[in-house]
Image 1: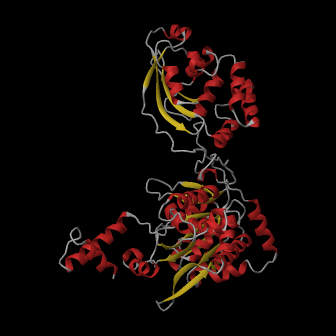
Image 2: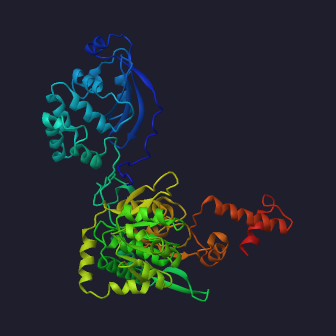
Image 3: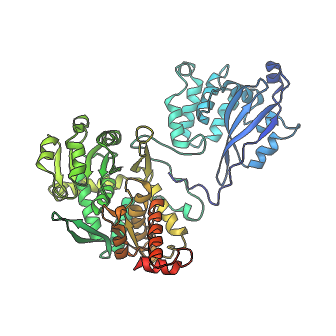
Length: 540
């Protein structure tokens, strides 16, 4: 999730630096050594009010210990640690003996999270946590209920003996982050939204579903999507959607997802090349209170099975017969008991696919949309799902490619998706003037966060005026390239769309350069010497 607690440019992280810190007299004596202790600053997380530091502590006994400490300013830490006059009391939130004992108990072979280290250290303190420590916890922790849970955990000797990773601390870490970062892993987790006092980081959290509704109202009958639909005879037919139509079809998809068994906080897997239906499936899953889980179109059946199972998807949306076969002809459906339906968005499922799917429904896109139109009660159920959404809820799962093991899922929250788009619209000089008209060409894999953010989230947020109304609204239309875009047809789409925003991976820019060089060579010029001629020729 984007951390919006920073008002200004964050301070750069300091380079690891060791400073001498005299050990408490009792500890130094116990160690039997006059070797000075050192503190090495490993990492700093800085916001507008505090600095959180990972520090690597080497005691007089030569052993390495890790700890997390918080200071209001880096200079305060430097002043308290440097010089012979420094004492442990200067850096301790509670008396020296407790401070030293906690660090002594936090010996670890490798770096742990700060919360783990402190938990293990505090539980290991002889005689239990002292009153000073309990007072410190009460003062520092922002969540009263969690604070009481921590104190109770530390005070209960029977629980303390049960293990070093109690649920209370896991929950606290997920909610607050011992190192200043926030994270969550539960499907229904709702992250806290931290705001700055001013600037784009002060924007209140919202959901993509809320902004999509605003985009529909503000965009109305303006063009939202442009697509060359493939035909059975090998040709293509131009299809366009207005923002009203885009929204209506997406909500129809959301109702169908609910009817087919997609639960709140569940998931819909999507595999295939970029089309309006990919966008509608993604935003429709979100509107239904679930999340989208994109799958790379090149993934083999086993990798598809892993993502569908890991994301707990109830419906899988596929592009064509080839992608459908990865599920129906490979036998993996037998290992995916949660899947209730397969939806094909170009063409119709073959008889073989339907037969191999067994009890799992195989639907064309038209048949799929009709599912949500059969029950008028679905309108109310959908509105309930939409109303229950919060900015901190996960809306999309972005999976890694899986080249070094099984794919890993990154949870993207509504706030993350919306705020990142708002920041882009606000801070990018080329597009930061509201009212501008923009076109985008969608051709990179939508299972990747880059394309998903630019092709899906960004237009919705921009046309919605970033939630601020018509005065901040943009006109944005997405053009979809053909599946063979990288093999050459992208140029044709670019000529039609004339994009004002274009995002590309290095190989695409290399292809542009190769084309420029070829044209320059044919005209007896060089790219460096006659760039104007080259660009002009290529553009024609």
